[in-house]
Length: 347
Picture 1 (cartoon, rainbow, N blue to C red):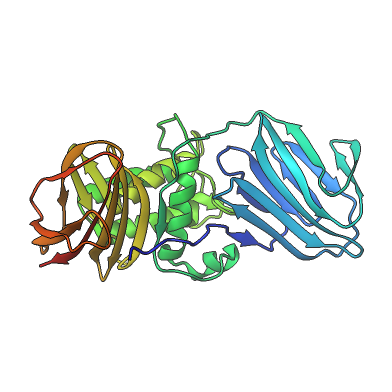
Picture 2 (picture 1 turned 60 degrees about the vertical axis):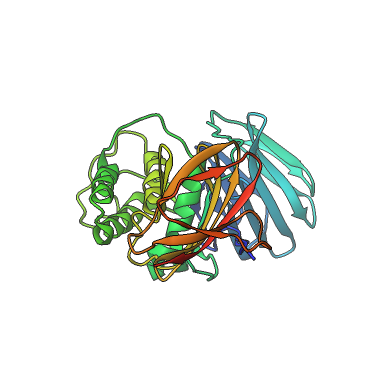
């Protein structure tokens, strides 16, 4: 049976003023217990504090931000999302109607209302399902705790996922982005130890809030990143591409599996890898590939580039059949709309 990846990427914070990108847009949202800052727009809610249970979720997979809490005499939950050219605030839950001030305009809102705000926002929508990385961490997705633990296996999947939802056309590697060039060079040299250190450096210096990119080291970590021209979103988008190269690479008719596996990422899963002829799922443990599943979009032939120690593996067209063993150098022929399973990688 092939394992399913059910973990939902939904980091959260209890910190007032937490900053995050609205997924699939370049819109920055800053959430407080009684206010929302959405780019240059400011919404203030008439809620009597102190607000308890304040939590903001960055729901990466559903492209929305959720803000909730309990005031002295009310409770609320707001959904912030982009639709039809506007940023919308949907009042999912609200015990009693309240007054909201939007740029000196007073609005009365109640449960199930929607506030639509016109902003100059770029939306990076795509019909392709995102690739999803899991590196064995199942702890609560409390962002302050994630930052304190400083575990690459924990923060890398969020960076990898959000990087697919944010695009940039600017190829400028200033400030922190200069480390992307360093990381790419180390990947090409297969220096797995040092590329991991560079990813950690980018994460600590190049992001604020919940993965809001920045090019200048304004926390004065001593890393020397003083320039901040260019598009900081390159840290997300190019970062995703480089992280991907550590686990998978497609070169014409050859698929490289775990070509630059990071030292600490000894076990994990990477699902829904989009190739030129199908979608691929990987499962590995103890730094060795264990299972591969491929859904073919079209007829094709290819071969795997695997670890040198692997000599052969099993191929099946269904979970129930016994299948057959082939050499790792053999050409594999696939047919459109068929699913193939590869396992029992033998040395």
